[in-house]
Image 1 (tube, rainbow, N blue to C red):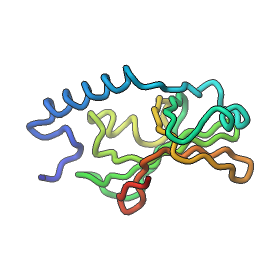
Image 2 (image 1 turned 180 degrees about the horizontal axis):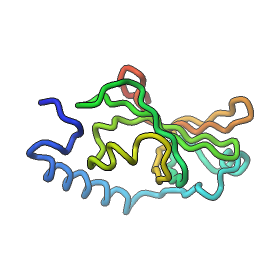
Image 3 (image 1 turned 30 degrees about the vertical axis):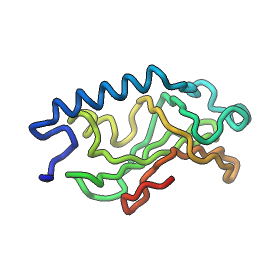
Length: 145
């Protein structure tokens, strides 16, 4: 595979993007997603969520690079939203962003976005409810389960 900024930027990008978009849309139609955006309260979420659930989080998110890689797979990004002593955290590969605007603007810095996250672990640390996304990549780019 030649080095490229993101997964959809080569000559097959349009077809790959269409396929992945269709799979995503079909999956979302069948998926139960809990919108926790207005319920970021530790007590409510502790009782409501279990590992494997899918959640929607809207609002101000922070995105930070784990490494300096800017082309090809392995552009690992930590993302998350923190409010009311609730932290939703996830990690992903920015290589899979669908456009240059997503790649450069929507998944970097501090932006107001929506995230769908599969709950992996739920823990309490120093008075904060910490919800970590399932299948997050570690610093070596390996998928954690």
